[in-house]
Structure formats: C-alpha cells, structure tokens
Amino acid sequence: MALPVNIEELIHGETVEWARIELKKGWNAKKVMHTMCAFANDIHNWGGGYLIVGVEEVDGQAKLPPEGIEQSTIDGIQKELLQLSHRITPNYFPIVEPYILDQKHILVIWCPAGDFRPFSAPASLEKGAHRNYYIRLNSNTVIAPQHSAEYNRLMELAARIPFDDRVNNQASIDDLDLGLIREYLQEIKSGLFEDSAHLPLADLCRTMHIAKGPNEDIRPVNVGLLFFSKEPHQFFDRAWIELVIHKGNSGKDFEEKYYKGPLHKQLREALYFIKNNIVSEQVIKHADKAESDRFFNYPFGAIEEVLANAVYHKSYEHGAPIEIQIFPDRITILSHPGPVPPVNAHVMANQKQIIAREYRNRRIGDFLKELHLTEGRGTGFPTIYKALADNGSPTPTFETDEASYVMVVIPIHDRFKGTESDGAGDGVSDDVKAPKFNTLNDVIVFCDQVSDQAGNQVSNQVSNQVSKQVKTLVEQNVNDKVLSILAFLEKGPKSMSELLSHIGVSKQTKNKRKYIDPLFDIDWLAYTIPENPRDRNQKYKITESGKKLLKILNK
Image (tube, rainbow, N blue to C red; front, side, top):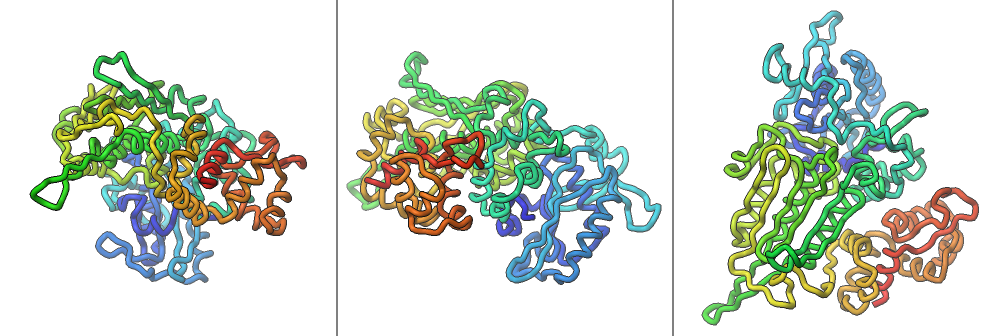
C-alpha cells in the first residue's frame, strides 16, 4: 500500500526536513533498527521520519539516479524489519512500502512518532546486547546517555503525545470525510490516491495515521479532524480564522469575516481574500528615467508566511481563533498561546532566524508542508524579513507575553498612497475585485469562499481572457468534460449512467474515476443521498461552488 506523501518530493527534501530523512545505500539491519528507535522517540516532536533504503547520501543530499536494491531481496528485508520491530521496546512497527524510482527498486520506511515513549533498542543484534535510548540530533542517530540533558528530556516525554496526534474519543471515524481525504491525496500526488478509491475508510485512515484503535473502536486523531472533517470547530472550540477590516483607527467602523472548515481550506481562503482585496501595488513613474518604482502596500509573501505559521503553531486545545486585524496603516495577526520555549519575547524581537527545539503540533506541520503551505524548520522568520526587505517595507514587530499570545504587526509601506478604488486607503475596496487565477487551487478557493452575491456577479467581473485561463486550468488539471457535466447537472440531478452517457463514454469504473470523482472530491458535485452513498437511487447534483465555476466557464 502506498504512503500518504509524494515520494519524489520526499527524496529531494522538498516537503520533509533533511533531519527527518535517513538515506541508506544498502541494507544495514543494526543501523536501521537504531534509526527506527530514534524516530519513534521523536525527542523534538518533529513527527518521526523516513528511512529510504537504496538511495545513497552525498553531502547531505540524495545521489540520483539511485543505486537501488535487488527486487529479490525486498521480501527478506521486510521480514527482517518485522523482527527488528520486536527488538525495540515497547514494540514499534513502522509502515513499509517498496517503490520504483528511476527504474530502480527502493524501500521507503515511514517511522511515525511513537505513542509510548521512551523506546529503547539493543546496541547490536547479538543476544543479550546492552539496550540504549536512541534519538535524532540534527541528521544523526545517537545514543542519549543516562543523566544527560537529552536523556532527561526523553524521560519527561514518557507517553506524552502532542495534542494534534492524540485520539479524540468524542468523535467517530464517520466524522472524517472521504472526499476531503482523497482531495488531499490527489493534490499532493500521493500514490495512495488510487488505492483510496477502494480501501475501507478505516484502513485508509490507519495508513495515514489519522485514526487509531481496534476495528471495534477505531477513533480519529485530532489532526485528522482538523484537516478532514467539514466542521472542525464542532470538536475544537473556535478553531477558525477571524478577519476584521477597520475603516479607520477608531475601532468603531469595521467589517468582519470568518473562515471555517478544514485548516488548509480556511488558510487558503483567508489568504485568497487578502491577496485579491487588500494587497495593492503602486507604480511611480519618473520623468528622468524609463524604469518605474513598483511596490506593494504589503508584500503578500510576508502575510502568507505569518498566517501559515499562526495556523501551524496555534494550540487547538485553547478556544481562541486566529485573528487578523487590517487597519489603514498595518496588519496584525494574533494567535494563541505564546511560543514554545526556549523561544521568548527577547528571542522573537532580536533574532531573524529561530529554530525551535520542539514544535507544538508535529502532525499539522507535516500536512501543511505536503500542501506547500509552509516550509521547513527555521525558514519562517527569514522568509518574512526577506519579503518585506525586497518590497522596501518597514520591519515587522513581534509581540508576546510568552504565555498567552503571539502577535505579529506588519506595517504598510512608507510610500504607499492608496486611492479610493484600490482599497489601500481604507483597508479594502467596497466592490469585489476581479479574481486572479494562476493555479487550479485559486479556482477552487474562489468557488468555495465567494459570497452568493459575488457569485451572481462573477460573469460580469471576470474578463473573457480570465475565463479562458480558468477553462484551461480546469481542463489540464481535472478533465475536459467539466463544463459539459456541470451544464447537464444544472437541469437537475443525474445518475452516474446518465452523466457518463451524456459525455459520450461507457459506464465503466475507470471513466467514473476520471470524469466524475475529481469533481466530487473538490466539491463541485454532491450526492442527492449523502447519508447512504451506495443507495440504488443515488444521483449527483451540482453544488453552489459548481454553479459559480459554471458562470466563470460560460463567460
């Protein structure tokens, strides 16, 4: 069974930090066992790691094409891995998957952080060997010597599971939405996407480590509910983003917006609104030179990084939303609680690069990184400062009482002079701006978040050129039958047979997966009987998001 990650990006270190990846040219049972133990101990709450057998490491990077391993040895290695799992105490079982990379066989061993720390392993494979506690320091697997700071830290973590990785006993496996899960797997290009079409939901969730427990009482973990339930705030009080637009500094004239739903969707929707309604560019021409000065009131890259980090590091045990306040001269982003030690107010105010010892949410970060919504450890602060410096903006301010909150203040560009039409003078324009679509996700987010009134106006706001661009994006990333399917469904709900017949293809599972499932997964289609997907009277209907897309495509 495939793993819920993009293997190509994993091997290139694009979504998982190198400290969490161990490359092995060949099989070495003892070293693999020690690294499995270290990833299971997860002393920094990074979320475990990955062992890749068959790929050599050169100067901290994967040497490609890979050396590979003999196909005939894979079964034997997997059997030996099971024996090694029993040598670790408590017993620890990673998830193993063979892959073919550049026509070479490799083995990817996913070692999620263990729930029953601390784990120990024998120093050698010989009977009666002395046992050690192994941990990861930077990119190395080392022993945590007794009474050392690392050893004491590991003992403190005994059976302590970060909140986002804990089982939620107030929810059931049915609270996880299969459509959201498949949409995520498709977006990150995981090989598990194809398997997910026929896997039982419980097995799929176990494979992704978003549910735990025996078959008779399998329960979702918190990170699964945060990303793959339609309304996470039902389980986590006020787990949403609030955006307040102030018309002035008096605090009396303002407009509020709420972004709810799965974490990645609310993050994208809030960023989409800010990008298209708050961020504005100003151009100053000079009589004595051809080049003009161009700058933004706020560089979008800085806002994106600050808000993504707020979602990543917020505590979802606290009933407090992330708050974005947009004033005429600044944007503030507030999240709760304070930073994780040893980061404090002095560090935040004086260091432009911060690498935390541990993270509050080890699993949330992994999902955001796979979706390219945040980067690796320690990259947030440099990204924010660079985006502001490149735009010529003032430096940001970081405030915290070290216990209850972190607030980032992004000041407006000193030379920015807004106009009534660009929204910079009062924080936002009164009219909905014509959206900018650069990726398929821009289209999906627009259809999800735009108001009904704006949806009715969209055909007047979007130019023919943009409409053609959207059509190209949809056809290239989904399929070329989308317009035909949506237009047919506008006349009323249709069965799968009717839909496939309408677009001129045979009634086969492969055609359903190609033409219907992708639209269902991104919420442009919905069931007429959602409580029983296998009902023999089941039909498909167009959603509100699908109707808005159809208006764009019909421009």
